[in-house]
Image (tube, rainbow, N blue to C red):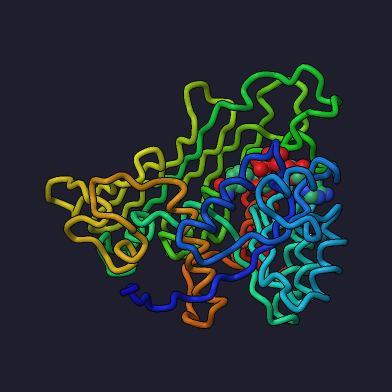
Amino acid sequence: AEKSHAKGPARLRLGMVGGGVTAFIGAVHRIASRIDDRFVLVAGALDNDPQRGRDFALSIGIEADRAYDSYQEMIKAEALRPDKVDAIAIVTPNFLHFPVAKAALEAGFHVICEKPMTTTLEDARALAEIVKRTGKKLFLTHTYTGYPMVRQAREMVADGAIGALRRVQVEYAQDWLAAPEEDPEAAGANWRNDPKKAGQGGAIGDIGTHAYNLAAFVAAEEPSHLLAELTALVPGRQVDDDAMVLMRYASGAKGTLWASQVAAGNGNNLSLRIYGATGGLEWWQEKPEELWYTPLGEPRRLLLRNGAGATEAAVSGSRIPAAHPEGYLEAFANLYKDAADVLAGNQQQTLVPDAADGVSGLVFVTACLESASNNGTWVSLDALRNG
Ligand code: NAD
């Protein structure tokens, strides 16, 4: 006799903008959306080259009538279908996030958007308003919030494991933009070095926002003021590739954020060290299964994902037992799994960053640009937040 299986939750229909054959993060979204079987990719405008986008869409199983030439065409056509997509993932260069998200939300679609949410603070605020007005959801894929040990760190801080916050040290160092571009005007030139496509912030927008978001996520506190030095260490570059930021918290705590894309030997060396009056926590993205915890006066101890002492969020964000490695893709999948729970109505609260976090990211970048352009003055984040 055939075994009977309980019917799982219906899969949500996903559309994608960007993430073509040459792209990096689009493929990560596709994998992450499938890990828990909660989404099926059915539509896409995957490329700025329509033909290449359609060809690639077909090659990954999108039906021909849903392989679109442009996001405008996709949103218009999907809105008229009875089996329209539920959500649209936006995985294009930064300057397209705002127009695509706006069009998608206004046409009634939920949005899963890459960071930074927009290229200007003005657009970020406008997008947050559109989210409110349309009642649709916007999930912002700050990947690192999906790691079980990051979620555990957040829960431990909230539970008082380190006491009152004293110091935040967050660093994101890479080296993949360390070499000068041969011809910055060439068609294939990296959009990240073009302020029209990336925004005025370079490294500060690209990875500084990840570091800032990670610190805010774990500390559950954002600084009130910052002072930034932004530098293009590669000659001729139009945006910063190295950023050093000092932060002051209203509570009296202090922070330092370093983001660099020109530090030889660093791949994705993101780390968070956070210290309070009674303890400290340390986490390295390249060893994501490990969280170091020191209660003041006791030996430093190594906590493992889904291991002894794991908190609720860390357990529910894990798929396999401790010591079978999970990593980047599973962390990303947690964002998709949690988004699916929200969209299916199973969950109201979510750990996935939203439009407010997107605004925070742009407040941060804007404050850094303002401080740096004034030769490093203290800038009030609160003033920009209340804008
Ligand atoms: P990429 O250059 O590798 O890919 C961008 C894709 O967008 C390409 O396929 C391109 O053809 C497509 N595209 C460009 N214009 C388009 C248009 N008008 N319509 C449809 N598609 C279009 O870039 P990437 O590294 O994948 O980055 C994309 C976004 O993801 C950026 O905003 C970046 O900041 C973000 N990102 C986030 C993470 C993360 O950890 N969450 C990691 C990498 C990148």
